[in-house]
Amino acid sequence: MTTNKPLLKRQIRRRKLYEDVVTELESLIHSGEYGPGARLPSEREVMEQFGVGRTAVREAMFALQKMGLIQVSSGERARVVEPTPSALVNELGGAARLFLSKPEGIRHFQDARLLFEGAVVRRAAVSASDEDIAAIEKTLAANKADIGDGPAFERSDIAFHSAIFAAVANPIFTALDAALSEWLAEQRSVSARVGASPVKVYEDHERVFDAIRDRDPDAAEKAMKVHLDHVADIYWQAPKGP
Image 1 (cartoon, helix red, strand yellow):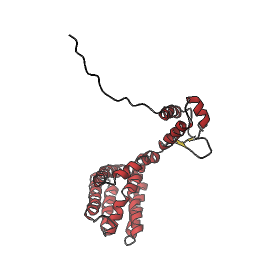
Image 2: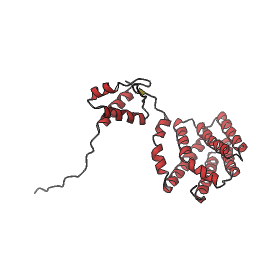
Image 3: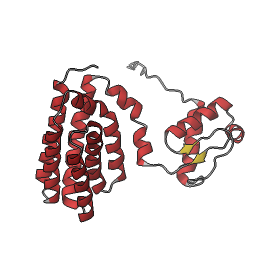
Image 4: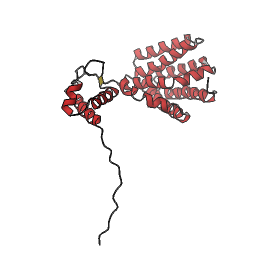
């Protein structure tokens, strides 16, 4: 006895023409046929090679530019560029800002930052060179000197954290640090507006630095957690709005 099995109902996504062009050009770039600095074929040449229209070619070039693989200048053929961690992370900017427009999104980012910076500061405490530690100490001194000058204190605050990331010598971490600093800028402005104590922030930084200098990863991670929890607590206790 035969049984008629129901057909699976699954929609098959149709690829758009420009996506095929992207796949082919990306493959040529990855293979090295078009290396960094090389010019891609002209719009007309790509149209003829793939049998597509101008719109598909332009959409493909826009997609490749968003991927950080090419640079497009008006009136010139697209040029292949060396991918960078910053370009990779910047692709997430729009989605990150939308995510941060909701309170739950902010909490998720704060939690991610806590985990991420905790791991980074642990590594800095273990592997930072004497020169790295001197660079971190220099930003700490600037942070202390800037107490009382809101904008300057904020800049040296960012510089202190960035110096720690620089000490781990990983360009992807550095790019993520810069992105998180930008995405969580509203957190700093809210804290400053409600009168978060610069002295307390500086003292938090000092404890983090002391642990790095003493090559104590556990203490460094704990000090960073205390600091970031403090910043987050001030943000959530503050009234939001202008």
